[in-house]
Image (cartoon, rainbow, N blue to C red):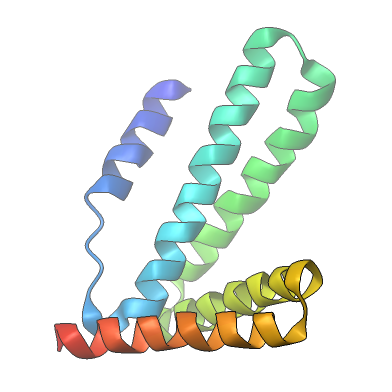
Length: 124
């Protein structure tokens, strides 16, 4: 099991983010990182004997793998990946909203959006 995770980790480390598909690639990296984190947690929980915790974590791994496959294999990777990036950015904005208020959330979202925009522009 960990051999496959090591292979996925090596693929993730070699993943090249390109400016022309910046948002989609950043979303893909995030999805792969989520998959790796969940899988490592599931393996550790299984090894420790905490099977009642390992089973739900394994479900999380399965769902994370589905998200990676859905984005990576879509015929319009750029559109789907960009939508995933926006979805997770909006989700993070909501977390900031509840933690620090609506104005802080708006500022956070604009700042992160502009960072992505300027990163994209600097690579073109």
